[in-house]
Image 1 (tube, helix red, strand yellow):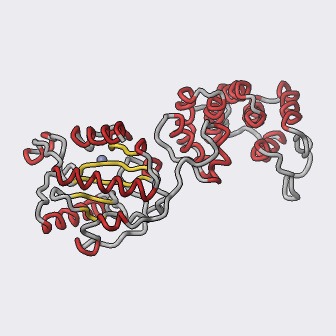
Image 2: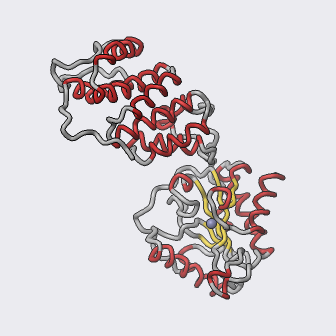
Image 3: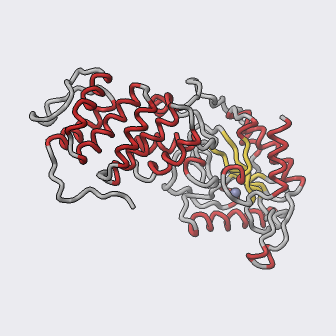
Length: 367
Ligand SMILES: [Zn+2]
């Protein structure tokens, strides 16, 4: 059970000082005219990181436990800044153990321990702490935490944009140069679309979506719905049904996938590529991720009734078109073979079934 701060605890001068200083722990931000007036305990405004660390260490023994908890968080941040990961971790853990942290401060402590482990190049150890922190952090720290958690878990992550990179780079082993660069459009992809949105009667894209960043990966799915879409009319009907299911049933902005392929090998334009998809599992996994879905049910699902009991197989025409579409997208966006995924690579799911999983494995292995 998390420790709760006693509600009767008075805000001492030090509490106020430490709260005011927490942002300043991370950088030597000058204290502006709106900062609290004396008598506030704080290191001199232009003190170095080392001097600040010394300042808090000197005063720690005389502090009340409540003030100590906050000073330990401050100290941990300064030690991270100074690159002393092990000592930072000890202080963040001491803050956690002292019993006076608020919920938000507990997330800060977990965030500190997680980053310390990353500095020590022990990402597996960082995971549990970053995950705990991710429930309590918001804003830029929440974004950094989500990124570093994905990194620590070894999930596929894009090299971050320059702004995020500046904040997380020292906790990762990424090279500073981004590993992907969008290439100039060749027009090949649009040539491969057989049935654009207007032709199958798409409803418009709704506003509740994130913009798509430069695509750097592709994920392959099946619709998990038994289908016979050899005839164009039935393919179009299937597209409208799926879009209705995703927009009205799931409350999404559009179809989750960017491209769909019917059993005759026709490519349908799904969610516009300007919009981040809703297919991989969560928004981190959907970042820069092009979703391609083959129409059909490629996994036996007897629990859903007799219609679903038998697995269909992807048709040769579907697989041929998948080959072409993936190659065109790779060439257009500079996507490497190692960034072609089956849905089941990214999350616990039976999608896209054994046949497509094999297709992805071959694609990753042989090209
Ligand atoms: Zn899927």
